[in-house]
Structure formats: structure tokens, C-alpha cells
Amino acid sequence: GNYEEAILAFTAAIDIDPKRPEAYIGLADSYEQSGQPERAADVLRRAIDLLGELPELLAFLESLGGDVSTQEDEAPVHA
Image (cartoon, rainbow, N blue to C red; front, side, top):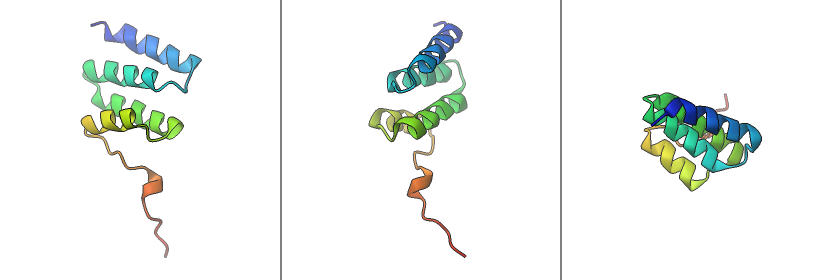
């Protein structure tokens, strides 16, 4: 229930080991539960950029209504 402390703890966990998707999921969940779904989506997008399109990250982002497509999925536009 103390989301501010959870946000600090998960942020510290990411600083220590940025390759753990659980830390990003925990941080995003803390933001969502504290009424900040946009920040939660930003955390998940950052995790996807760093760790790849892991199913748990994509599913959480989609549940927030976030765009799960990446720039790699978009076709380049040539003039």
C-alpha cells in the first residue's frame, strides 16, 4: 500500500540490475496503483527497449492501453 516506498525500492533494484524484468514490472505496477498509468507505460516501454519484447512486459503494457508496437515493426517511409 505504500507506493512511494515501492517506487523507490524498484528504482533502486533497476539501478543495481537493469536486466531484471521483474523490477520493471514492480515499478510499473507501483505507478499504476498510485494512479500514474502513463508513467507505468513509460517504464514498460523503457524495459522493452532494453530487454526486448518479453511477453510479460508486452502483456502489462497492453493492459494499460499502451502501444505495444516498436519502431522496428513500422515500415520505413521513403520519398
